[in-house]
Length: 202
Image (tube, rainbow, N blue to C red; front, side, top):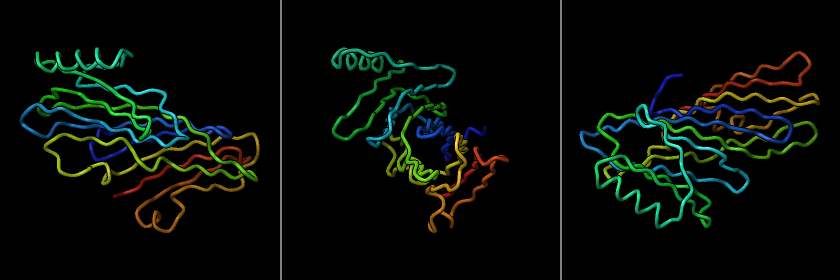
């Protein structure tokens, strides 16, 4: 896999009515000074975020649950001492997660790995699998635009079912998506499995 900052990488496994999607994104601090990075996860109600891991350089960060006040205090202490701080929050009203990472050094790379689970529509042996409409976005105070809108999407989907697949409904079949996307669909001999490779350009 290329570690490109302008690309969102997706791998989905669909089994009957459930889809598990792994998302990988990269970010490199483009500035000559350390920054505080904000990662925003907009989550639709029918999609659950079950795991996220942030890797900063060679260091993997796994979150721990603690009281809000204590977490914020530890984060501020880490930033003040020049170390990298990490804090995450969940907003119930906005159904979104935010992750703050302090002191990302110049040219330092950040890798985000997240796993989502969702139920998909299945009727008359057809599948309605809507890929997440919004993806985690990266922000820092010197950035004036939301760069997530302009990312390339490279995805691999594997759909497996006990019944024969007769029809696939996916967002990349609509006319607007076709203009900026390419996809390949390969079925198994018994049409019980479909492998889809999908690329969407901004």
